[in-house]
Amino acid sequence: MEKHQLELIELAIKDTLHVIQKQEGGKLREGLQETPKRYAKAMAHWFSGYGADIADILKVFEDGADNYDQMVVVKDIPIYSHCEHHIAPIFGTATIAYIPNGKIVGLSKLSRLADAFARRLQVQERLTTQIADALQEHLEPLGVGVLIRARHMCMESRGICQQGHHTITTALHGVIKDEPETRAEFMSLAN
Image (cartoon, rainbow, N blue to C red):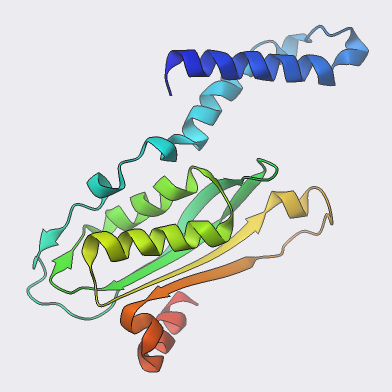
C-alpha cells in the first residue's frame, strides 16, 4: 500500500475510534493514540494479496519432474483471511493438489498462491475457486483439487456466537473432478 492510502486508513480508523469512544468526549485515551497507525499497517499486511502477481507466483518448470504424472499434494497450508461482509477474520487450512501435465511449480508456490488470494476480502467459496482456477490456468495440469477448512469469526464472535464450527469447501478440475478414483484419492489425502 502507498503512504497516501495508509494515511487515509489512519484517518478513517481515528474517526471510527472517536465515535466508539464518544462517552469519553471523542478524545482517544492513551492506549488508543497509536492504534490508527498500527491498524493501517496491519491492513496493509492483511490485504496485501491485492498487489500479488499470480503469474509471477506460479512460474512453472517445463517438464521439471521428468514426466511425473501422479498427484502432488501440499496439505494443511495455514490461511488467514477476512470476510468481505464484516471484515472479521477467517482462519484455517488449505490442501492443494494437482496432477502435472508437463509443468510443475516449486512446492512453496502453492502456499504463496493460497496466501495471495486469502489476503483479500473474501468469502470462502470464492477463495477456494480462485486458487483452483489459477492453478488450472497457469499449470494446465491433468487435474486440480483444493479443499479449505476454516473458521469464521463473523459467525463465532457475533450473530449466532457458536464456536468451533468449520466450513469446508472444495474446488475440483480435470481428472480430480471427473474420475471417481482420483477424486477419492484427493479427498482421502485432504482429510
